[in-house]
Image 1 (cartoon, helix red, strand yellow):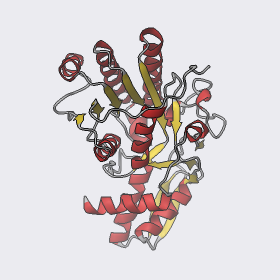
Image 2 (spheres, one colour):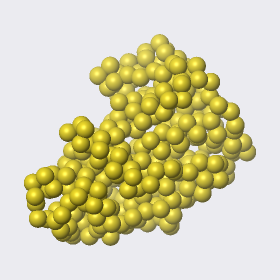
Image 3 (spheres, helix red, strand yellow):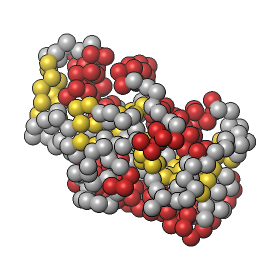
Length: 319
């Protein structure tokens, strides 16, 4: 059941003290750029070297020093299917500690507005497609990232309990698969999009006759450019106020094989793509139902091919 006051209207004061947790990561840096472009004058950020959010005492001290009026939680330990499969303890422990410390500290200083960013992996592996927000906790999770998903589900519950017990206007959003500037292109720990961009680039440079694509290539995925997510985050902070998480996505998806062929075309790779079905596929399909966000008035503006071209251009500049 949704809160009575689902929609709010009103721009955030541009002089608000806004803390972007994880502002150097792919998501956080995009949000930071968006807020700068919107002329927010009091942005607060700290690198992981300056503030380890897993350290509870230092996190509380930081919040009592800065007393942010708005918090955007884009801080997380993230990785691709291989990293999640091989290091579930770290993905569970680190993300739980980051979230709990950050939200407990925000509660201690009574931060009135907080946006927690989760992930579409919180939904059941075999959820009805497209996945509605109401699908949460209705089935088993995908085993390759269940530890990360459980941490993010706990974050959603943390937001809901703070709203229920203290009446603070905190919200949570569940982005689909993200890509863009400042992504990790590490071949062993990155997500599928940056991993494929790097592999096709290196294959093109080396003149390799083939590129091996993990799995069958049949799983379908939805991809949202991180600059679009940043725009959606500000939109939600100014237009959404509900205890239920809200999906942020594109509303359409592609097969991994189609994605690989699109990246190959952008990179101008001339070889062949070979599937390796011995490698894991992950969830068969993960398309978000974004009808609620669309009804509020927001829609993704970046075409997938254009987004990949922009991401590849960034990659080339930062080799």
